[in-house]
Length: 324
Image (cartoon, rainbow, N blue to C red; front, side):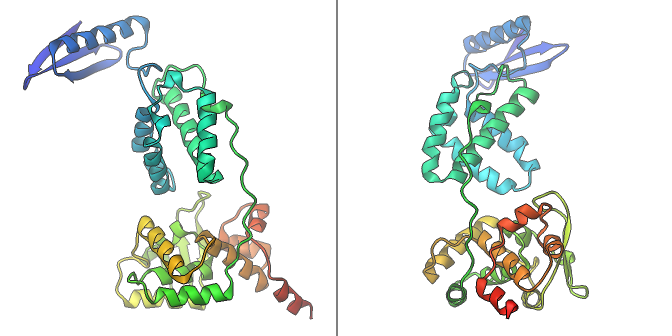
């Protein structure tokens, strides 16, 4: 049986069960409270109490729960948080789960392709995993995941973009007109180490050993820790940052740096250059300097040499010099 109590001109309905615990909700009127309690008692009778019914929850509610409970446990949580917030403003999120068909998701996929293949892929992966978690752990009463029947758009051809010398010079000149003193040091450090943006921005001073010339990364994209050897230029960048007395080697958060990077590109008049291309540039330079596959993999953190070669596009002129 449900119990009711009036609190500050509102009515609270409380439904208790020895196996499922207590469920309570507040309503503006006693009539609504009674109606809700009857629905919960009916759920107790048919075994659906405490579970999500497909016709009683929309995708938005599940995505919010996923964002607040699952995303904080993931690496790259800041980027995933942004993607989910964007999804919450998309019309697809207002769809009831019972109406979320594979056809609707396919239409959503094709619409998101206008913003890029990666955008479409990431959104579908998030939706698919969100529903999977809801079915397996949150009690969503759904026989199958409609996102499982959707074909993800094929990944684009691996980028072969490298940083040209004139682009480096223009970036350096443009950096002198920026108010944020951390932007150019991050760019230089990325070129010298091949580290990812998140790895650089999460560095702490205790992770740097100037004597052994090593930066220790406890958490990386592939889940393994690694030690990155530091070139003389990388050490110089860190020394200059230390002289400034900053709390972190690069005291700027991910979102602020993304915005600053976009402004830097605009000032330099450079298009089609991503920050991740600097990792590509660094790895290619390592090979051009004569490092072996195993040595470069130790620096970059790649476990599969095939993935490593996706980043590697050597300069034919440099190779020709070696042949001579």
